[in-house]
Length: 459
Ligand code: SAH
Ligand code: SF4
Ligand code: F3S
Image 1 (cartoon, rainbow, N blue to C red):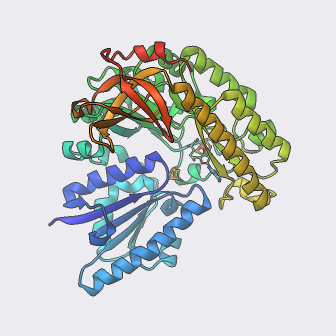
Image 2: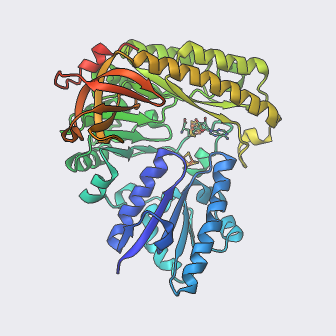
Image 3: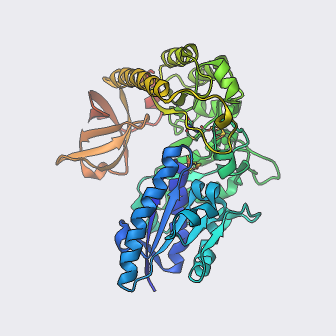
C-alpha cells in the first residue's frame, strides 16, 4: 500500500540530511514523498532547538497540522504526526502533553527505528529518545538513484555527529549527544553511491566536523584531511566542502588538504561567536581571539584564495559595549565574505541561561549594528569578485530564456547566458557584475581546469 509522507526540516544542514535518510528508510515501507502536508498520511516535523524562536515555531506549526489531521479524520482518513529532531530529543513527553495531535516523538539517534516506531504508533503514542548502541547509519537505508537525482547535484553526508565541547550557550551536546565519527569506508561507499547517480559536489557534515576521527579500516583512526584525499579521487566528485568546523580542531592534515586538493573548495565556515576574550572564555569556546586569527592566517597561507564565513552571538550574558566593540573590530580584521548573527537566546539546561542577562533592547541594538557591518563586508567581497574568472558548477536553468545558473566556489549563485547542456558541468566564468545576491557572469572560453581557480582568484 502506498502512503504519502511529508517531511519538513528546520535548523541545520544535518537536519536536511536526516530528513532525506528518514524518507529513504521509509520508502521500502511504501511511503512516497509529497510536497504538501495537505494530502500526507504521515507528517514528520524535523525540528531545531538551537534558539527559543526555532523551538516555538514547532508548536505553531503543530497547531496547523492538528487542523489538517482533524479535517482528514472527519473524512475517515488517518494522519500520523511525528516530531523528530532536536526539540523531540530535548522536550520528549512534554510534546505529547502540549499537543494532542502528535503520535510519535523520535530523537535523532533513533531514526533507523522509524519503521518499527510507526507500527507501534498505529496503536499507541510512541516515544523513542534513546541513544542506542546499535549503528544508526548502518541501518538507515541509502537513497535510490531516482531520489538522489531529484535532490540535485549537491549532496550532504554526515561524517561526524554530536559534540563534546559544551559551549555554555548551546543545546547541541544535549540533543545530539557525544561526538561519534563514522568509519571512513562507510563514508566513501556513500559518496561513491551518490557520485554514481550524478552527484558532483559533496558537503561533509558534523557539529564539529573537523574533529572527525573515524576508523580507517586498519584499526587506526584517520582525519578529515586524509578522508578528503580519498573522496577527491572518486570519479565524478568535483567539489568537496565541510561544515561546521570548530577553531580548536583545525589540524595540519586539514590545512594541507586545502593546499593540495583543488576539489576542496576555497570557502570555510568557521564560527567565532565573539571577538572578546572575556566573552569567549565565558562561552567556554576554548580559544582566544588571537587563536582564531592564527587559524585564519594558517588557512590563508595554505590557500590564498580562501574565503571565510562565521557565526556571531550578540548579547551573551555579561557582554559590555567594549566586548561588542571587539567583535565589530574582528569582523573588519578578518574580512569575512559573509556571516550569520544571532541574539543570544537562553536555552533551558545550559549554563549561560542562569547568568545575568543583557537587556533585550541592548541585544536588538547590537544585532542591528553587527548586521549592517556584516552587510558591508559582504558587499566588499562581492565587489572584489567582479573581473575574476572562476569555475562555476551549473545546476539549473535560469529565470530568463537562454540562461543557466550555477554556484561559484564561494557558493554565490552565478547566472550566465549559456546552453542547457552545461547543466551538471563545471565551466569557467568571468564575473561581470554584482546583482543583489548573485554574480552575473559570462562563460570564459577556456576548458574547465580545476587548478585554474586557484591562480585566478586572489582573495
Ligand atoms: N555545530 C555548530 C553550531 C551549530 S549552532 C558549531 O559548533 O559551530 C549554529 C549557530 O547558532 C552557532 O554557531 C551559534 O552562533 C548559534 N547559537 C547556538 N546556540 C545559540 C543560542 N543559545 N543563542 C543564540 N545563538 C546560538
Ligand atoms: Fe554547540 Fe559549541 Fe558544540 Fe558548536 S562547538 S555544537 S556551538 S557546544
Ligand atoms: Fe538545530 Fe539540532 Fe541542528 S538544535 S542547529 S537541528 S543540531
